[in-house]
Length: 312
Image: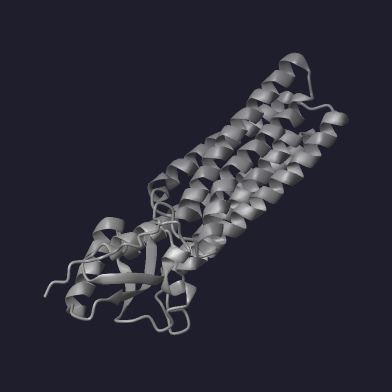
């Protein structure tokens, strides 16, 4: 499935997921409030954040589908990344908030009705699992859908934990289990949010994409006969599937620039899978003292003795 068909498909699935999730959150929150269960309320909080994340994923998906414009030459690819970043940041804050309430409850326990807790959490478990399965298809290649998918799966396990704590409270009467289980919820939230926070932060900071080493790319280009030096090399991702590269390459004057350019481009595409690149060929560096003109000053890779056979 490509293009618009898949967008429409995701959109309908995400909208369904949003509607289901809204019902669960309301039920859990009201239930938790009435039953004095921080476990249920924590689960509702966890769900609410995921509702936000699903909403952001949907919004970002709609935006990403919009074409590039004069003022946004990359289109709206970054919208999804910003959504993932905000979403994971809010999740981490929520985790912190729930942790504080848990600690308060551990110090001053309150009575909780385990049976009702189990019933409400069970509904939440089934619904979350259903939503996760709805989203599984799109999770493979989209950071946002993946974030929503993991949230939903995490939610399902968290609800399962709340069901178990409800059962244990029924059997033993230990109400302290309720805040304890919500500390596990906090763990689940942090575990899901941290990688997404880190990945989106890396992209927003224009870091070199994971799995690609700039010095390795430079060394590869410099190993092509006729290339003297590579500098001002930048590799970044607009979003995980769209990696860009720009570079200045000094070549020996007797080589045919177009052939060499073709060689360099093919090599970068085959070795590193980067398809979008802008390469400026030069016969001499505009400013030899400029640190950017010699990447070797920036890296530990000293290939000083680079001599190439001149092909006359």
